[in-house]
Image (cartoon, rainbow, N blue to C red; front, side, top):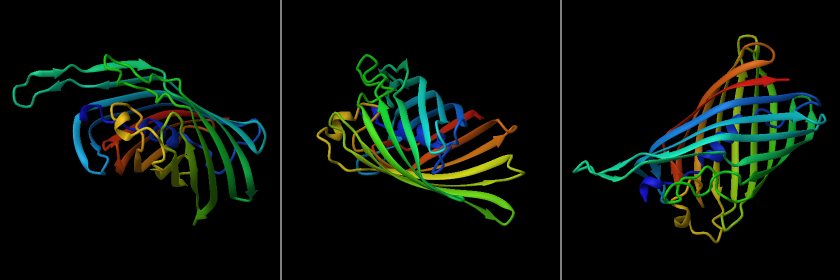
Length: 287
């Protein structure tokens, strides 16, 4: 079963680093749009006891579009569309005889979409608080491959309620910001609900051309589902997954509208999750 180790990385190591607004909703008629490529190849994972264990190399590659648009100065619509995902695992080969035990497989599909509404609760100077309601649409493949173990979605409809608080400030002559969030994710079909949290800090350098960002975020399971963890041990999206992840990112503004980004993310601790580093690159447009 180790070669099919589960991961929730697709949901939050892909979605969270793409979020541009934090506590600040978009102004009316303005927006942020990003085309990204995210990938991970993992040959080890955290067990249900939080220990590292090797596995046959698994891979997940996702091409996605993320967008924010301001309907009003307080209300912003957000979409996350993984329009192409490739999930795979390598051949399983005997370490003593070299015999092929299980041939590798791969599937191509769309992933689970997210549709959200963000509302600005507080906007005072450089301080902002917002609330976001997100709906996770189970549009991805939940049982691909010859054994039904390759997935680009978990097959369940979830709802996330999140609060963000952001603050802009100056460090000497440098513009900087910080943002923190907490959220509750309600999962269906027997999956446990989750507590999600995170913090990020960024600075604008070289006349706002370069913005390095450091993010940390995590997931804690309430362990209140009726579906046991081992029942999802052969899927991409596990039940009772937990992790604490570090995710630095660099954003470069080519001009006032266009820019590029590159980042990585790694779960430094966790349960039922890949232990390898994920990477992402993207190009963004600001209206």
